[in-house]
Each structure stands twice: as C-alpha cells, then as structure tokens.
Image (cartoon, rainbow, N blue to C red):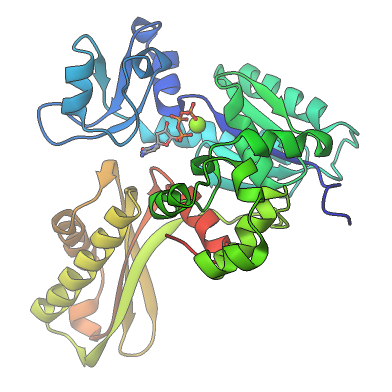
Length: 362
Ligand code: DCP
Ligand code: MG
C-alpha cells in the first residue's frame, strides 16, 4: 500500500484524570484543579484542569510550585479505578470500529481504520462518531487527530484540544510539518532539540533543508528517521496490545531453600529492583503478585490489590511477605521467587512505546 493511503486516528482524552474527578464531583467544575500528590509533601502534578493550565501549571510539576502559581487551586487525590474503568469503556468503543487498536496509555490510542468493521469510508467521520460515543458513554471529552500515519495523527490530536478534531490530509502534510517546532516531533528529546537549534533547525521546514547524508552525519541512525518525518513519511504500523500491563522481576535462588529469612532477603532485592523500574517509568500499580516456584517445579502465584498505588520497595516487601505466608514455601522449599506489580495506574509507556519503535532515543 502506498504510504499515504492508510487511515490512522489518534484519540486522546482531555485533561484525563482531572476531567474524571470533575465529572464525579460537580463542585470542581469550572475551577482550577490539580490531580496529584500532597502540596505539603513532595507530591507532583499528575495532570490539571484547563483552568489550572492558564496559570502555567502542568503535569510533572511539583504540587508546591503549582500552589505558588495559583493559591486557589484545588488539589485532589487520584482515583485510579475510575480512570481504568473509563479506559476500558473507550477501548470498547474503539473495538467497534477496528481490532487494530494500539493503546499508548489509559487515555490515548491509535486506531488503524483503513478497513473498518462498519465499512465507513471517511476516517474523519469515524473519529467524530468515536468522540460522540465517548461523550455519551463516559460524559467526558476526547480530542482526535486523523491522518495517514501515526506521527501526523498524534500531533494532529493536540492541535484543537480540548474537545477538538484535526485532520491532516496528504496534501496538507507538507505545510503542516513545515510550521511545526521540532520539539513537537516524536523522538526529538531535549538533547536533540538543542543540537538542532545549534544547527539552525527550529521547524520542520528547516529540517527538510538538510540532506540525508548530513542528518546521518549528525544524528547517526536517527538521521533517516528525521529525514523521513520532515517529509511526512512514517511507516510504523499500528500495533494492537502494545500496552505494558505489568512490571516484574524474578530470580532463581542459587540453591533451593526453605529458609524464610533467606527468601525475604531475595524478595527484598526484587522489591528494590521493581520499585526502581516503577519509578523510572513514572508509574505505580494497584496489584502485587508473588510468584513461587517450589523445588519440585510446581508454580503458585498469590496476589493482593490495594486501594492506593504501590510504589516503594518497603511496601512491595511488606505485601510480598504477607503473600509468602499464604504459600507452602517453608514446607516445600523454593527454587524461584518473583514479584510483579500490575493494574498500572499511569502508562508513561506511551513515550516508552514510541521510543522503542524509533531507531534511537535521547
Ligand atoms: N499523567 C501522569 N503523569 C504525567 C503525565 C500524565 O500521571 N507526567 C496521567 C494524568 C493524565 C493522563 O496521564 O490525566 C493522561 O496524560 P495526557 O498527557 O494525555 O494528559 P491529559 O489527558 O491530562 O491532558 P491533555 O488534555 O493535554 O491530553
Ligand atoms: Mg490526554
């Protein structure tokens, strides 16, 4: 298929956590709202309402800073189960149109509707239907971008946020990209942005003036990618079910053991590793699972779900210890132990997934 004949939609909920909180608590409507940690401690902003964004508040900023920018801001704690429910509801709507749905996080996904279940010609029409159905089902708004590849659809969905739709046709792509600041290009992180600025590359148009040889010279493998996206070429397919569902680690003991103390030491080390991964991915999870393989190779798992996100090594260890007591570890001796966090609360894997697909990262 020629590379400009696919029909790709990117759907992204507006101010997702904040919108859910506002829906469920009418007192928050029309007010600057931050969802996140505690402003008195070292909490960060997960997201905020558009009213709060007007004061310069944004995701990943410290709550303390958000408070300084807007003292009347209302801080609310997240309700992950509500977000997961909405995530499931919108997924069901997407699947009415195509099975080629690639979630990037709880609130956003790519859909390839080149061929689709209801046989609708216009991807723009589908995007409007999807947005309407989301509104009906969840009472929340989503924005969508429609184009012929992932790169353009994703950027397009941001253009008319909130509650907007943007279409970039193959004819419009060149102009659309020419005007884009390079930091909006996926795969351009801060380091690359600086490097490009030093070369006088500020927009898509500037990028396009550089030859493949030149870009290869400065950016190595990534040169080809930049060369292509400057021309609106992005052949990455929409990959269903790419969403990371869990983060875990396991280890085989150096010798089978029936010693609880030794098992807890191993679990403590696993807990440290899992907590570090969870933090690196800026996520957390609601469910902890302990896996035990006994010396006779029988495998059992025990799980526990919390009403708050599990993030720290200490909490992982203490939960895992409780789970271990529900196994026959001491009796049967153990060969392998594993610790996994699931029901992830955010999915910063959006970035991760995109980076994984790119030939480089910075
Ligand atoms: N999120 C988070 N920490 C971040 C970024 C996001 O916890 N650093 C969570 C909260 C967001 C959700 O993920 O509500 C979706 O992220 P988006 O980037 O899509 O942001 P929003 O949906 O909040 O706003 P927008 O309207 O800009 O999409
Ligand atoms: Mg969003």
